[in-house]
Length: 315
Image (tube, one colour):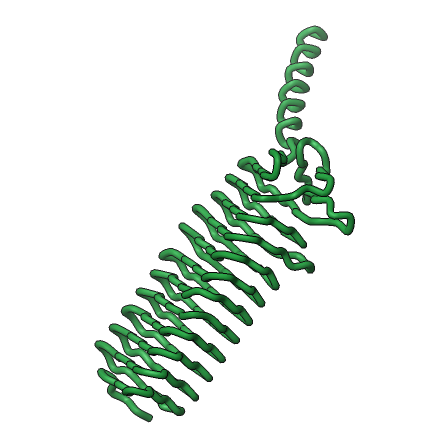
């Protein structure tokens, strides 16, 4: 009887011990410096890391919330010259914070499946060429402020919602933000760029806000859904184009100027457009489309022509 009880207790201990080991398994991130390429790879658990540069010029990859880096709480790379950085987080609800990083060429970040967050720290980062951020399935939050990017800045949320806020970015070429069929919120504030930028949110009830923007040109396409687009203090050398697709949409321009053309197409639905101090060097064209559409003119001028069509209400 005692022998049987001993074997039973031993078996239970083994099962519980195995389960305990499994539940206590730390989230693991691997960081490897291969010459001037830094590669950071997560697992399919919820990883949380900070990638930062200290006052000595060392680059640190620090685990947070129980995440280990190469089996330790953090890893330090002594004064590296980073030509490129690749961050592959894979599955899980990951959280990445990047603070004061300098990359001479490209930074590529794939957040993977799960509800993920990418944020910048108090010290802005500098990317010599291109910044590419990709999601997968799940909801993505991207918050970047003050970064300098020599080439293109691309944020592609893939499947799920994209909540993207880019503030004070100085981009050599273009910003491209891409959402999907879920509700997306894209905000550009205080950004300057040398190329033609594009925001595409596709289906669902999306919100796009662009404020204090200077660039070569700007295109906003929200597609189907009850969408809201607001442009405030936007100036471009080339065209500004907004297409909101079907359903009831609201578009507002305040202090918007293009040295070429402005085109707003609202498509189907009972839509509204309001413009205050809006000017285009050449053509300013506004199309209401199907539905009972409202046009509010608070000062809209096209240097060559102002064309307002398929609007029914002029309050």
